[in-house]
Image: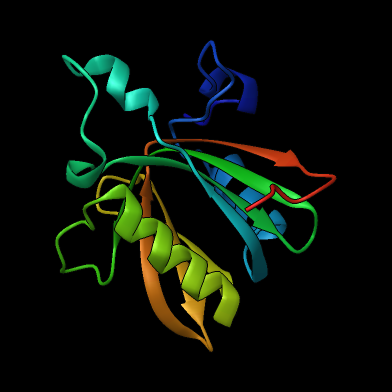
Length: 151
């Protein structure tokens, strides 16, 4: 049974379950868009479930915002980033920040909206149609932006 958008959101407005309607909205709104900027957060909502803050160099779960060319942005929560579907998740806030900044500078695209085996959201980021990062996402919000974040 398919839920409406508002029923699939939590009290913070985050989507955690990828319904058919939400999947279609993401395909229409974000797939094929160039990533203009990325904001990587030092802390994650996931930290609240942990017994204390996770050191930045040990972090494998991140929160980040993807700012897209069509003036939409995705607030992404509980993200694990992979170089390939078979790889271990990337570790370390600083390292992921460098990788993302380098890819955005070279030309990074949110090429595909997909799902994993558990039907959770996966975003495929590419450079020249070659996959560079797979983002497994626990929660997200789609918004509009007026200005890009400062570096």
